[in-house]
Image (tube, rainbow, N blue to C red; front, side):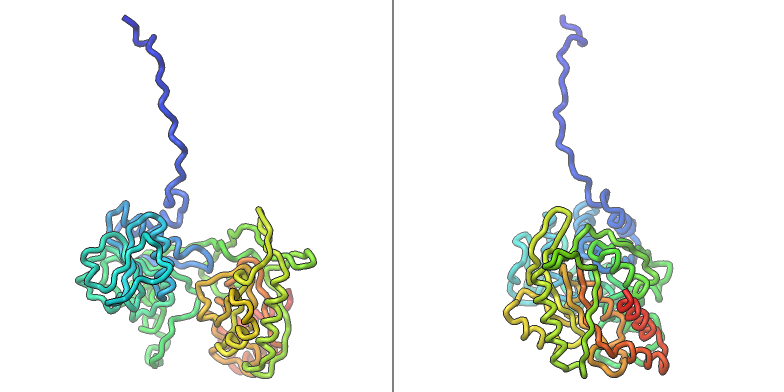
Length: 419
């Protein structure tokens, strides 16, 4: 009889190395997942620009649906955001559906893995994650959803009034958003709630925290993957004094036609007699064409900068329209106001300073949310067109009414023009 020791040794086949699960590799996802899975009724995640808000939402939805077995609903603030979230969740091989209106048709460009629900009655038979805009959820009967948890993307674009209406959809809510961006657009009078942190017009997360305080779990994303160190040093103290964050962006630069690497932020002076002055659009278009002769350089490669790599951000719609007319032969360039480009990013951005063409500082052109959005769309380079009269306008406004917005705008302008 052969002894056991004489038996041939069997070596177990080696399994290929598996990448770590997202929540293992990402401590932010792990922390928010722990809070949600633990049953915290309200979670607010504050994020700087380019920190991966939608990525967090999509992986959180996938983990809670697959591993926790929860029925998850996702609310986005625009149709484009809803399509993007649904496509990203579908790319994770997670069962997901996009909720549309009654009789609506499947949107073009929707991931084949994403189901399209033409009306709320189909929710009863839908499994997995369901994505819709906030406006669509507000017109949905709560007894048809049966959701365990509601995830809200771009939550600071949502009013506290709409958040209160959404609250009946699920017993748990996770809100992810950027506190420095443009406040929700409210068309009705709000003066009666001036000074109230929980007024119906304030951003949803602010109202929720003001009302429920320590009952709300709060988390911060502290790294931006879009903004470089110089841009981070400019906007963090100005727009995010209570949200310290650093740049984790990989090296990327725009190299001009002479082989010179451009700084993250440069300025150019123009003189405009009003916000309607055609020189604003002419100058913006000229800078776009100048950038098209540049190269986009990363650690691994270099290539020509294309129209799809460039954006123009203006304070006013008429400025964007006139700029688009000057660049009609370059349809790939993204051109719009701060409100319309919110959520977008490009390698290089031409920014029209909000005071360009203005003789007075107003609440609109001193709005910090719009300025923050305009200054945080670029990954590699921003070129800011500043009116030669902007300093005088802000100095006069500070003498008459030294409020926080005007003071911050003046400090920003000083840093921009002295660098």
